[in-house]
Length: 486
Length: 97
View 1 (tube, each protein chain N blue to C red):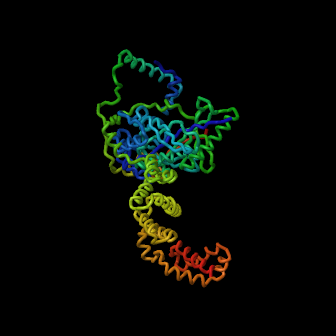
View 2: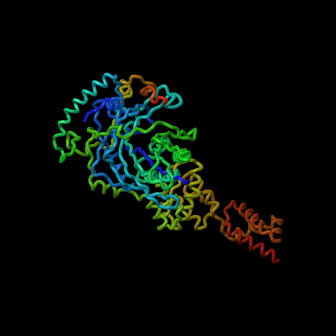
View 3: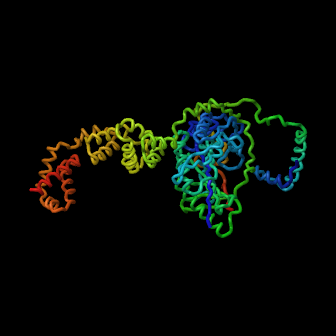
């Protein structure tokens, strides 16, 4: 029997503000514990919160990039529950009036562009951080609480249950991350927790109208973990269906990386148990049209649009367009290099996705740390086009530029790497090579064409790789055919 | 509208209040008296009124995104019943089911 997997994601993004949502404490990552807290974010009695305007602005920008309707009016509600990482006893969130609704993100899934619905995005606050003594939360005799993170602005982005495989969920997250990086609203570092994602997953018989009972999975710290956790959970739910014992209650499960499994945490509380009500301390927000228009006009070109433009304007293959636009830094680099270069954009793309990407992976650095400038790449390609250097030397020069930041022209001059294209010089070396290697020459003349490669190599070696390889081949060929006739 | 003892019991758990059986009985009665009193408001027509949530009619009150000095850590932890490594120490969070 065929099964259908239904996945919806709940994404949490720490917004890139200097200070917290309702107080002036810094949002710096990894500071000494409990040094970035004040009466407001500690929830001390009598403290009054005042909203950070930037957090609202970044939320609107995100809403616009995700094609949401931006609320004219929004306000904060209290979500009440007891947990040690929540010192106030409630979390500020936007339950009744989310800042954005009815958005979507276009994602290329299995070669098809699909709009995945984003019913709501809302602004809320981050919880503190707990450290559990012992092995984990269950075994711990006690826990230690650091409230530095408490009340950092957090944007929750909720997708419709429109993803149908773990791979689609992963692809959506990659796309969302790229978009968030483009609009620069968050650091998006999953390892540091500034981008997190919980997943709701259910399985039903294909064709069923009703969704199965869903399970929420938490604690996935990478895209790979997201995919693996969903694989594991889908398998478990399919086997429950096959045994005729489908899930009866909604539950939360945690992904346990070391075990490669999801483990039961708790059954889910009904939503009304949070006893939401409007927070009377924070005054309501009215978002005027001109504010929205102003922010909209500042939006950069988004990755999906950029990708399409690359195919049209630069005639790049879809593969190149998708990869280049997947990082804003890389896309900016590409465009600047294309501007500085007279040749085909595809050549620029080849070098970025080839040599540059190879070296970045090798050195495990970020694109932003790269010492090569777009101008340097353009210069290198120009040297190649003008046949000042050959392809092999170009790779060598590029590597040096990558490690030192030196300009290719300077490296070529300094190391005397200019291509030897003087036919007289090459002819001389060719003659010498032929004289020095009578055996390969004889092999070649007897029809062993492969021997030519060896002779070309000898000439190249003599010029330390600098000879124009086509010229070497042509001149060798010419000399040898002269020999064969005589 | 009135509350049952069952509801008061559920509510006390939600609020993490430990009530005895006698307290539940007596609080249910007291809460119902308050509810009856408040129910008088039901007689007033409020169809055309927006619910009053805020004491003042201001909107868009905010601060610019600037960092201000936080509390000294000593002051932060001064009221902590227990502490360890500059953190608040709290009892076991989850019991095994």
